[in-house]
Image (cartoon, rainbow, N blue to C red):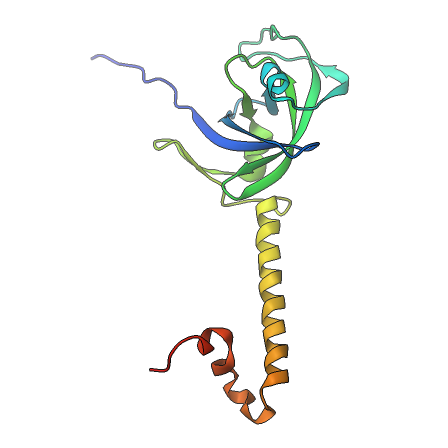
Length: 183
């Protein structure tokens, strides 16, 4: 009997990062990493793309998966930016360190907060269980508020323009009904 090893599956997300100071957007592939204990941005990437790096009060020691100290040294800076993914938006703070070939890593804090649906075979990510603080939830709430205001406005206009004796047939005076031909 012979065994073969398949390479480990990696899941990447194409996300947009927006700089807070000038609203300039940068597209990037972010690695989802359940072994990472934070959100990270590569130092070289941050510098090349012009992200504003904030110096941390206390540096954080970085250890690799094998327990060795990262050659890039301690984390001394962070970047705060907006992150976009398929209608999802949120403000994130990433630790800046030496990631070599990876530009952004979204680790366990992000994964636990958003609990994304991951199809490991197709390498697809869906964010359908956003927390209340998430920008996607806020956008959906705003849309509902706007619809309610529009509905209330339509109702008010209807009451002004249509005589009271016809209110029981108000549906036919609505925008949608008024635009279709009778059958």
